[in-house]
Length: 398
Ligand code: ACO
Image (tube, rainbow, N blue to C red; front, side, top):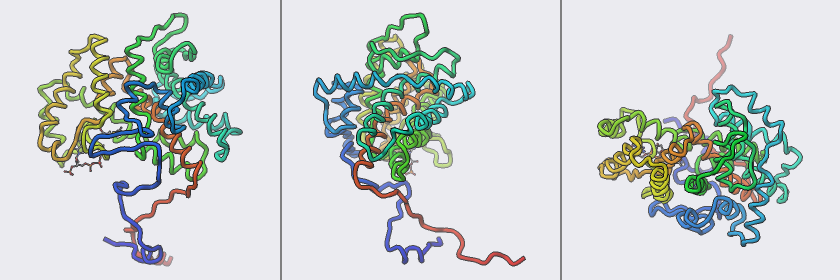
């Protein structure tokens, strides 16, 4: 290998860590993960307890501000978010600029980035007040944007947010309601939706959050930074995984084919991977996956789908993989995405919307990290490289 020795000598020693497997790029007080023991804490609180007893907006407050709100603060926060759920009427035009068959992630990425064109006079990164309003706007508007991406793709009229509903009920209403008909959200499905939002709210320095921090380190505006996070989340190795899980289960098609797909996943000459298995940090059960598995069971029972063929394939696949030497040795456990896709599908959400819902949920995590960074001392993020190209050479004489 050719190494840029001159660069190393000039700059001193630096680490070569592809994939940032062992490089901390920042310090942060938001989220703690102990991958070996399957622990995930937000501001010190275990994710299982938050999923059980909190709601998504309270978790947003916690991630953003560092402490749980008092009852009065919580009510005020919920009311404030409700005040910001509408989109500027002109934003409808953005949606209409896209092809109807555009991927909803493509639309979301564009629309969120475009928010900066609406609030350009309130994006001062150094103003705590403006950062707070931006957080409220983003938390409040993401469900409206996400639901409108869906409504646009199926040619139905956009539904406006309703203030009498909770955050997750309102999202379901904007997804599945139609004008002139009263939409009554199912409380079990709304609770499951809220849990999905909570379980995806933050996960420290994952690829999309690191992207948001890197973009933010240049001083870029928060909407542009969140749009960069959405773009990074889109890939199948990250947020696109739950969509990929469902595609994979459909491709497997029948329990009798599972062994064949397990063999493909183990074959190093085959690029196929078991989607929804493995995690860069968790080398034990992902604590979110446990909550998700229970929620999947509740939702499928509520909807009478306990015998859904894809659920059966998923359960069998999980059992086989957990006993297979290849997966055991490499500590490849089901991750949060293995079950979330099943819940979303049962609720009636199309697979192309799965990553959009992840992005909606993760916006608070991205924002909290961006906010933490810009409120302290930070430098522009600028990774180095190990040069492997040609030595210096002369341009050929003509
Ligand atoms: N199926 C089969 N083999 C796998 C899988 C899988 N899903 N995941 C990892 N492996 C194998 C690798 O081939 C490698 O084997 P080797 O040591 O014999 O070469 C070993 O396990 C380690 O894998 P890496 O790719 O080095 O692990 P890394 O930490 O880089 O990747 C990742 C983690 C991207 C999540 C990976 O496990 C994967 O691709 N999983 C499937 C996609 C997925 O579910 N992504 C969602 C992640 S969670 C989230 O974003 C919310």
